[in-house]
Image (cartoon, rainbow, N blue to C red; front, side, top):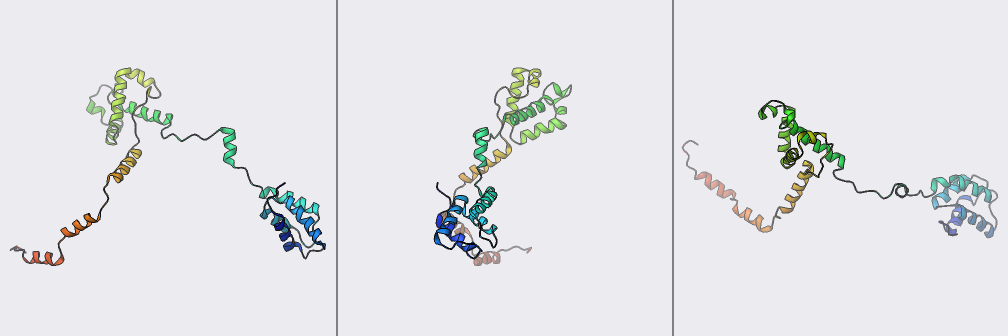
Length: 230
């Protein structure tokens, strides 16, 4: 059986820690016998060292080496990769979905409700201007300001197609609807701007420097400025 610790290390550590203990081996064969016992017991160099540090004054027997090794073994055994355990039990992890179905359903309901209470039957017998005053009206204006006009138009079309009564009974959109988080939209916009922005070249710097007036030229212009009120 292949051991994780080579024999030479076991013998070297054994002599380093226990060579002056009472009852230590008197022959090379004796040292080799105990080194072999250590090699069979230790799962790592750290484990080997911990075994030897346990003994004090009296040189241990092979049985004592084995007993101490088994007691310390759980601390030094390689733990199985927990992720591998989870994958065996639950399968491979799925990629995180940016907009899970329940999140999209929540957004769709919000757009549907804000239109229902401003443009639909939920507004009551009031004018559109009156309906736009208050919580739902502010919500519509905020959605437009945040760039959700396309989503609002999509829900308006659904109301015309299915009717408000049927639409209010639904928990989510019967078909995918256009929605982009403002955070994601801003992130993409910044990324595209960074890509589109031209790099500043040496020629640009030279042109900018050439267009600037020197200090002497500025002073000359000020001296020639004829303002009677200065």
